[in-house]
Amino acid sequence: MSPRTPKGQTRERIYRFVRGRLLEGLPPTVREVRDAFNFHAVETAREHLEQLVREGRLAKKKGKARGYGLPTGFKGDPVTIAIPLLGRVQAGELTTAVEDIEGYVPVQSRGTGDLFALTVRGESMTGAGIMPGDIAIVRHQPIANTGDIVVALVGDEATVKRLRIKKNAIELHPENPDFEPIVPDTNELVILGKVIEIRRYIEIPKV
Image 1 (cartoon, one colour):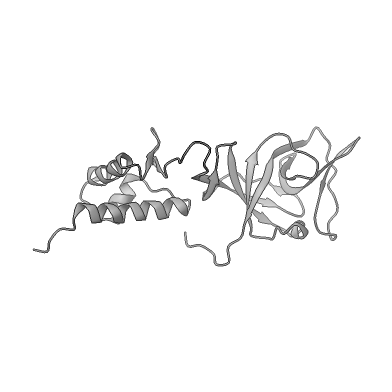
Image 2: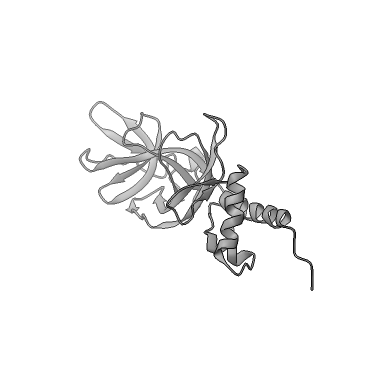
């Protein structure tokens, strides 16, 4: 009979597994931890996770299937959270907005507002360094200042552009001379949020 792995070593492996998944934006369920380590019972995985919470290495969110996260640091320190990747947004011609959750993206946050992410399509914002395939990290907010890069909904269609507020109009400007500004009817325009960060993968991550 081969000796059992000491509990401390197993727990360290579980911590590294969970932490890695959280940083990838894919928080695991207790059952996924059980399956990853070939435990016979869900309670065995739960026991290890709860001990990691007691040690302060993980934090628990009540009432959620994927209820384990990285712990909060000192007050005001940024913490790693997983935010939803909500489909795609066009940086070019307008396209119908997509809101289905495609996955999760890890970000550092101080809890200053709801965050979500969108995958950029189109080339109208290349002058601002926003390329097709980039991930835009967006802070949900209904208003923005002139000059901000925003995700805006015009009717049922979403786009990412630089906001220009003028005396008699609100304009959505591209950062590429091949594209024209969008001047929507103010009754049809909704600001979904301000782009606060852009992510670019050199190698496409495995799902």
